[in-house]
Image (cartoon, rainbow, N blue to C red; front, top):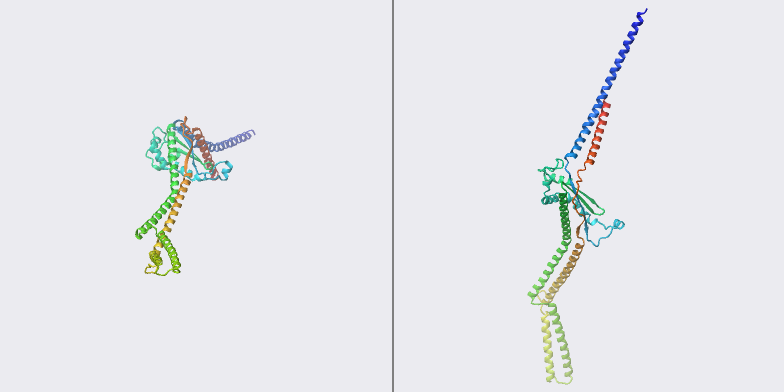
Length: 403
């Protein structure tokens, strides 16, 4: 009677122990993936965030070479006194800078271009300074760098800023010593000033080229007209046929007037004297002489000398001379007008010249401004954490979908 209950109690205890062991095994098996996930999580954080951040901080703290900055500022201005004020200028009180905006963009392109870099390199040996062995590897220019790589490196060492409203251009030069940075900025400023002067001179020459060509054309035309008149005078043996003809006509008119007066006196004397009277005979001889001179003068001016076409030779001569005189007069007027246009173009070109107005000269920096270590480390930390967080979320999302 007492043995059976003991056996039942022992069996129940065995069942309880078995259930406890099973639950313990299940809990152990569920905790192992969780601990493995935690380990993977923190290991990935250490490898993807802490290790690169530590390397970046070590680089900026111990290896990064200090860079000094020199700044300069200028604007391109013109002396065009006829330039008006636009709507913005009327509100702000500033003159319109639209006429120099294109030149400003040309200068901006020049500041980051190869031509400027090669000119400054010839003066200050930029390639040798930027590729020094004491400069850290990330900031150093390779000694065998190509021109294209050198230009890319230069664009990382010069920063430009342009304000289209005011037309002000500012640039910043970086180098590994403050004095060298200032020398580079001074050279860039001088070369830019030379470029603006060349642009102004080229614009002035372009504005004057057409006016000068027109003056040369009209001068050649006037010379040809004068040469034609000179050849005509040489061939015709007459300085001014029109003036000569006018003198001959005046002389004939004078002779005809005297002939009329003599004929009138003859008519009066015939009423009182015989035809053989000495005074009447003398007057008649005078009248005959005057008539003969009139006929001779008329023949001299060509009234009786006709060519094969039936046109007077003197008339042809006068027509040719008048044509040459008209051409000379027109050429002279055109030449005078071209000279006036050239003078006006020269005044306009002088008013539209460009010059570099410098308002900020490069100065020697007392402290290195670059690299900005704290800011760069914070930026790197933010980027690493962001990339690691996004990657982790994507990884766990994909794992959850697969399981």
